[in-house]
Image (cartoon, rainbow, N blue to C red; front, side):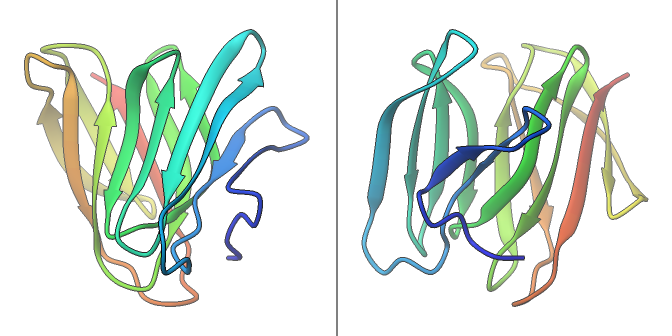
Length: 137
């Protein structure tokens, strides 16, 4: 998978793609409007972070590229790539339980904390795309 050169873009399907894990220094895009929502992305090889209307949506350590990121009524789905394993934290519903699938494999059930954050580990290696689906149970 390639990185997102302009840091964030909207795909023809309406899904978001963002992040560039190859950048040595932090770069950001503020005030990226999609359907009335305002997004902000910060990214580099160390971290990738996405906010929507000032609220936390996605963070990975180290940095990643997320392609086809879409928030559904009951979770999120996206494809992620990076140079090494990453910890991905998602902003979801407070105190909810979610089923997680990574590359079509059941990765278990995770409950969000009071802030609505869900953290998962994704095994990555250069040139590999990993599909992630997080769905409220």
